[in-house]
Each structure stands twice: as structure tokens, then as C-alpha cells.
Image (cartoon, rainbow, N blue to C red):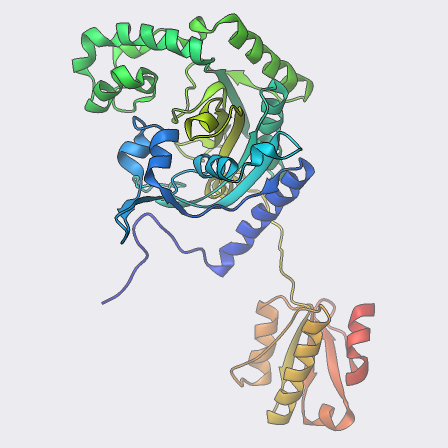
Length: 421
């Protein structure tokens, strides 16, 4: 039997991991500038957490979660997104009692959703996200959005579009919900079963339906923007003001509703407009979630965050032809000729590594020509050649692979020579 990677997953091979490491390092450095600290949560949580936070009418809960029963008959779910777990940790560890508020966190790691595999969409995918919990200031909304934009721009992406909307507060959404029910109810039988199920619980999700998006009632549905109360309008105006003073260009899209039930007020997406990127253009999405902390047993603590697909950032870089930095460097490749030379090479390589010099050697006992080819493929900066003659003289031949020059260097002086040069 031949084994293959499960459908919807992929192996990330060494030739690709440097690209991932480059993005991960960029993320860590940018979050540090913004004073966001990393949090790491388990890859599975109690299923009830996602039912209460993400929403039982969402596609994620209804169709996409990997849920299983463990040996203790507990229902557990592989995390489909990052916010719920971070908020759970915030409540469980009483982070609302920390002296410095809001609590600013970021996470990075695998998420799991059962969905149709396509370019940039996998059943196991890597997501980076931030959460700022404990402030209802519209300025923190702008900060979170600017952090997301900075990541994209530092990744070398230029074909970007920032889209924002206001989902309003609880009062505004209740009024809008009532009007949506009145609008769709007479003809709800013409819609898919998912929409029929959502009519009373969360009719806003009907507007995001991919099956019935061309139904005539979609175009005439009451807009949420028409139901925003004065407080919600003022909040959204403030967010736009802060984004403007930050120099961030944006578009307001009243149809942007996002796919999770916990969002209130600000919602946003960053999209790639690069030619050839694909039909699914979203790189990042997020919004404010006032009420989520209370919903899972915590105190009143408004929050805002986003999730960004690392896979999708890499695809966008590829679409734009962004040159990626080379992270790893091989300082020295040691060529050993003969068994005694091999012993010396092992000793030398060990000493190099202990002193912060990247080094490698041949483990297949190949001829000198083959070893030199290996050094060239690995882009070694220098090659150190050790043979019987060199052992007798207490030195090695050091060849600079850039200009081709070479010279003999005493074993005792190789380390200091390399550090000088």
C-alpha cells in the first residue's frame, strides 16, 4: 500500500519552508513593534466553545468543523479559527485583571476546516491573528487594521484593497434583523435549506449565502447601514477618521458582513487585487466582537481582532512576483579525503558550529569532485579541503567560492580567520 497525504492537507518541504519562516519572522517583528505578545492555545477545544462563540448557524459550525468524541465521552473539536480559544484563555486565566489593558495578543498555528480544497484553501491551514481585548476605543480598531496592513505591505504586497463596514451595536442589529425577517419570510421557501434555517436565528447570514446570492431578493434586502443608531454611526466615523490620519486608504462596503456571529461594529477585509491571484481574493478578515467575552463566561470586555491566512500571503507574493529573502547561509562546507581526514572534518565542523559558524560535510564518502558539487548546490561561501597532505602539515585548504581564491590555513587559525573575513 502506498501512503499519501490526506486530502486537503499538504507537506511543506525544505525548499518551501524558508518562505514560511520569512513570513513568520516578519509577523513576530511587526507584532513586537505594536506590543502584541504571543499566546499559544491547544489545537482542540471543547466543542461547546465554538458553538457559543462562532455561532451554531455559521457554515463553520454546521459544515466545516472536525469534531470527535474522546475516550471520556467528551465532544472535542480541532480549532477552526483562533479567536474563540484566545478569548477562552483570556477568561480562564483572568487576564482581564492584568494592570495593562487592553490585553494585546497574537497567535500563529494550524487551523482545521472541512471544506473543498482549492488554491490557497486547505483543510489544515496556517493562520496568524491578533486580538486586542479590553477596550471599546475606535482607535484600537484602527490600530489592529493598520497592523494587518503593515504585515501585508512588509511582505512586499502592493496590490491590496482594504474594505470596511459597520455591523452596528446590538440595538442596531436587532432592528436590522427584524427587517430582514420581514423581507425574506414570504419567499423563504425559494431559498436553500441553510437560509431557511437561518431566517429566525441569524438572517444576516442569508446575505452571505453562496447558493442563493443571485436571488432577486438579495439585491433589495434592507441594508444594515440604514439601521445604524447614532452611537454606531459615530463609532464608525471615528474609525474612519483614525484610518485616514494613519494614511490608510479604504473603501466602505455595506455588504461586508463577515462569516462569524460574534462580530459587532467594525468589520474589515484586506484583499489582493493582483492579476492571476484567483477567485478568492481575501487575505485577511476581522472585526470587533463586543459581547463575546461575556458570552463565554467572562466580564464585560470588548475586543477586536483578525485572522490572516499565511498560505494566502505566500500565494499573493507569488502572484506579484515578490522576491523572497534567503534566510539560511552555509558558511563552510568541509571536504574530507580519507578516513583520518574524515575524523578531523567531524572535529572541525563541530567546532565551527559551537562558535556560530554554519558548517556541513559529506556523509556519503564521495569523491572530491562530487563533494565540491554538493558544496556548490548548497551555495557554500567557503570550502575547507582536508586530505592526507593537509593533515601532515597541520593545515587545510580554504577556498572562497565567490572569487575562487584559495590558501592554506593552519587548523588552529581557521576559526579566527573565518571570523575576520
